[in-house]
Structure formats: C-alpha cells, structure tokens
Image (cartoon, rainbow, N blue to C red):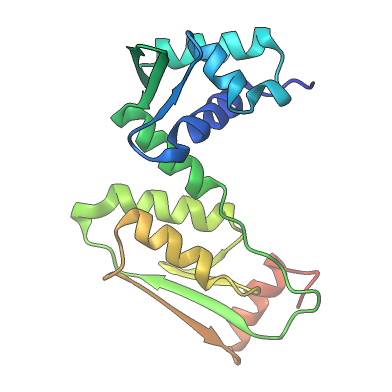
Amino acid sequence: MFYMETRTTIDMALKIIGSEGLSGLECEASTLPGLLHHFGLGDTLTPERIAKVSAELHRQHLVKITKKKHGIKVQPTVKAIHRLQKSVINDIQIRPLAQWDRTWRMVTYDVPRAQSAQRIVFTRQLVRLGFTMVRESVWFHPQPCFEAVAEIVQYCGLQRHVTYAEVGRLDGNTVEKLRRAYPEIV
C-alpha cells in the first residue's frame, strides 16, 4: 500500500462511485468506507486512508448516501459530477510519436467575451498539454493531438469557436519561436 495525495484519492473514489453513472453504486456494505473497499480502493489504500477519503467526501458534500434494506446506495452530487468531469479532462494526454513527422498541429480560437471562463479553462489545458502560443490565440504542438483537443473543446463547449489544422510549412519567425519552445524536436 502506498500514500497518495488526498485530492487524488478523492478523485479515485468519485470515479468508482460514478462508474455506473448518476445512479451511483449499491452494495451490501453498511458504510461508505466499506463500499469503497468493496469496489477496489482496498487494493491500493489502507483502511485509515479509505476512512479519511470517506470523511472528505461527506465534508465536501460530494456524495449522497441512502440506507437500503441490505446495505447502502451512494450517489455523486452535482458538485461531484463537475469534479469528475474536471478530473477526466485533466487525465487527457498527448501520446508522442517515436519520431517527429515534421508536421505542426495548430489550434486557434476566437471565443466571445461571454465565454471567457471557458476560454481560460481551454488555454490552461493547452499549456498543460505542452502547446506553445506563437500569436494571440494561435497555439502549436509538434505531436498528433486533435483527439485530445476535441475532448477539451467539447468539455468547454467551444466547438463553434475553435479551429485546428496540420501545418507542414511555416514562416521563419514562427519556426524560430517553436525552435526555442521545442529544442529537442526542431
């Protein structure tokens, strides 16, 4: 058994609870720690950590627990669903090619001011994934990434405002910026 940050273990517990959708999970266990242990957290966490995570799920109002005749039912709250969605987005990764195919992937957007919160989430994800901004709202990445970008675009609700393309040839100034950002590739 190993130690994990509480935030990570809460996210793991929410993924277990939300694995069957909004209806949650039912189990013959009589407590939330018992349910989490039953559904797999006991394989990675000590009973003490499971109890701590359970207490945090209650404290943060992330679960609704209903007593049943033969156990309990645990459902994610709206707050938990939002957290799960954010956790899923943060799990998105770009798989690098073994050898660069000399093709740049460009993402550009024009997001209305009314959706600035979504734009902020979107650009933070681009930074997390290793994109480089070469002009305002124009980002580049050297690896195939459109599936990851599409998931984030959908999560942010920006489908109408984001464009992506593969680019084989760039001007000298842009190449120089990308050379500084990706010295191991260019």
